[in-house]
Image 1 (cartoon, rainbow, N blue to C red):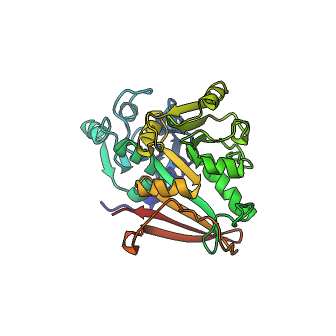
Image 2: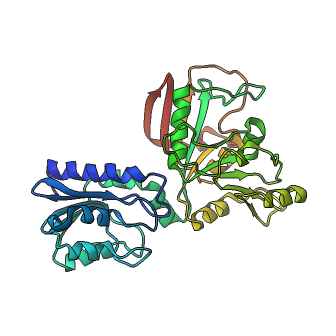
Image 3: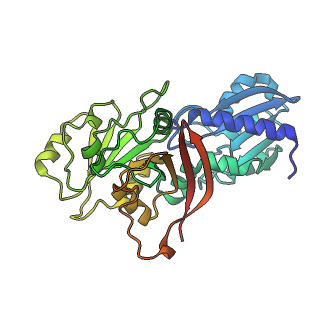
Length: 366
């Protein structure tokens, strides 16, 4: 299919609209929609949160009668089934639109291909694939949750140029610049969950909020602590009203267990094992609760385990122009015996943030 510059421009607008709701739509995808009549936008909208009208409905309401005979640009295949909202395909058919351009099919088995087929059967011209890779990228968490039943995981770490996350004493405040820390808070605003290990809570006593972000939404806090050794009075439990989940095992201190269970906005997920928290099962439980994405912030032991179990999708390492000498690394829990086992990265990107260097890439598992 050959698209013209106008098609590309309008779909790019739809993709921009979709991203307005980052971190707000799980378990649903991000979707943007633009309705065009005579090369002018007459309606636009995006899906704002689960259970509310979809992007197409917002755009149709704005366009009104001008939707008749129009071209609709939508970033994801319109739904054709009844869920918490009516089918968008029916709304488009009833509005008598002429053409629907779709970035990518919906991987959800209850939708995939059915929405396209329903529109075509109604006599509407349907085209699929415009800016498809961009559309898949912004919905990577949704796509993974739907197809793999586990969440998309980004591992973010701030480290010195010689690869340390703290000096030998454990002090890590502050490795990166103020601007780089604000960037990290912006990630917390768009990921469903922020995940850390018990050592991060004990050593740093963090708040795990997105403070400083205008209209920010604090993520759910997930703490992996197999023996329940974190202090009950840790700052993480009082820094915001966001839910805190503690994933633990049968090794958990029973006295602490009772104390945590009495706290507001705290859930204990206790797994039937005397060993470590089963990370793959934990990831499955996260998706079952309706969350699609995790921002993993530490520490090196937990990140190493997550990487070894092939649960991390992307890394973002923020390097500060400092040298720390001996100290912990961001992947101290990953034990390899040969360089042939080293993890490969794809789609590398490097940029600067307030005097620091951000290195990002997608994990390529063998």
